[in-house]
Image (tube, rainbow, N blue to C red; front, side):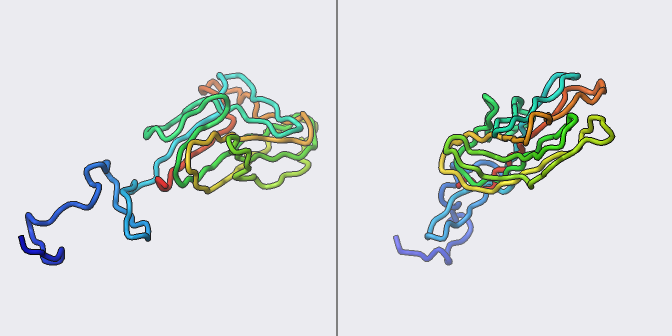
Length: 199
């Protein structure tokens, strides 16, 4: 059989890209810059994990040392990109964008507060919230004052457990107080996970 350049192939002689048989729906081929590539997702995958309590139950208190916020519920993970157990979200290899947030309810106090995303598998901090110092109550009343955000982008080579952690300058702050509404479970914190790339 004579050699034929790819540029000269037509109709039924054309073939699908390498590894297409293993690709899933909505994946596209992405070059790796080293004369090869892989099929990867066209759209980022997303999951949401929450700290929830039953309707009417207040949130946990922050402590004077870094401690895990009780992320205890898989709110949404249609593509099964992670799991939640023991206050931590476990995700695998890939490039990720994480957004965490936690409520701050002031209990007759004037103290600093901060949250972070912590890779507890490797004992590394991957994201820190803005610094908030001397948050105060108003007129002697408890006030639900803040929602603290934290963001992080990073690449993992394998499975890692991630915690949303908080720290306060005293024991006078909680993640939230019952909203006095009959409106379903109380939600006091979340980790929102975006998988940007498979590697």
